[in-house]
Image (cartoon, rainbow, N blue to C red; front, side):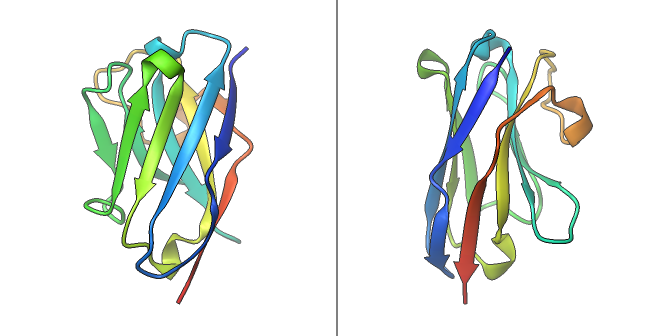
Length: 126
């Protein structure tokens, strides 16, 4: 069973930066594609970014492209989300997720992911 634990959330002013981390245990982390999703109050969970199992393929939601960067460290079973130029609309609970399938292109829909963390709150004030 894979366990995912997010950290690094917090409150920041618009224009600021945060770096989210997701630590994985159990399973074979280096073979999983990893994704970040977010859910704002009264909204559906949405895709933010994903990285393939090797780290060579990445994808981003249009809303965060150019501001957020996903990366992974297979040696330390971790995935990161560097968030720059944060906006109030980035406020949400951010979730880390793992996909067991070795897709060529990482999936963007939450139904494609098998394991989820508990989430970390990010609040951006104007």
